Image 1 (cartoon, helix red, strand yellow):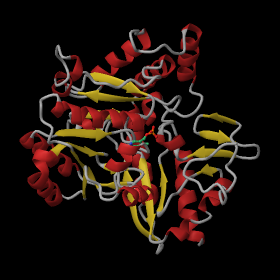
Image 2: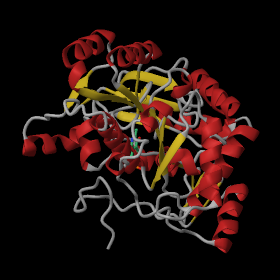
Image 3: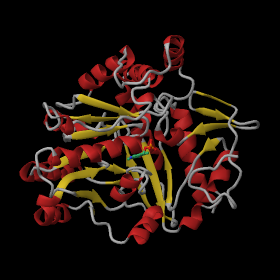
Length: 400
Ligand SMILES: *Cc1c(COP(=O)(O)O)cnc(C)c1O
């Protein structure tokens, strides 16, 4: 029997059973649904994309997987070369792993060991944001500030190694003033905090963070597992402000297979490079650099460039803004739009109860959580389909 994610199994409503998928659509026995969630924000090209499916099939005909311990292969080499060219600045060194959480763990391990390799054992703390989400493994839960995980805090007592601040420049400056010689990194979901409630903030905060990280020699980590590949209306937020370590996941493989990458700049890489074996990065997920994942990721990035996905994303943002221009509801506290993400935050989570089924009956798959009704659609969506997604959201509030 399946144990489903984030669910009380006793009271869980039966999940919709998907029998097929193509383009923006999911199919059940009796319904055809626009996936407004892009399977947790990953399926940017839609389902069953012929180019991506072919890439996987071709690679499976050669080999699906060989380990990167003592071996290497063309798909991993080509993907790392592609990322090196595609990513901004000197983010050139790609450490692959099987999921976003693990890739964040790797980034946090890199940051701590970077200073330890220099003989600095005092920099044990992480600076992070309130409402941060960085994954479900233990260190990422600790770096995060998801209410669902606050039981961890209660069980273990105070968080000794993580400091959380809100996204204000005052709080940022205070934290650096107070803790700078104990910090190894400042980790953020840049511009858009996803699982913490689709919270959006200004780039000036990140610019100031970059200055302070330079001033106090603290590493800046961008967790772009959710924001990477265009979601904020930028290819990467790293195009605007350059981090020392960048983490990518979710859309990396176009949503085809779980894979992620932790990309470091030259400064971080050189902190490990040398003759001493003990300065090596001791990490190696079994399925890192999986050949199917690397092959499909390479094709996904090629499509993103060739078919000018940035203009598709800007069009999604324009249509979304236009469709919500005159929208108001006394139940809605705020409408937030950034790139390919729209969120309607309600005052009271109970006003979203029943929305998922309402949307299902109208041909849209949606998965609101807490006080947030949102859409992060596949970038290949047509105008008509996108309008339908937004109309469904608006109709719910018009009706209740
Ligand atoms: C989803 C997500 C993760 C975790 O990725 P998994 O592949 O689910 O482990 C980490 N950081 C952010 C910002 C995410 O949105």
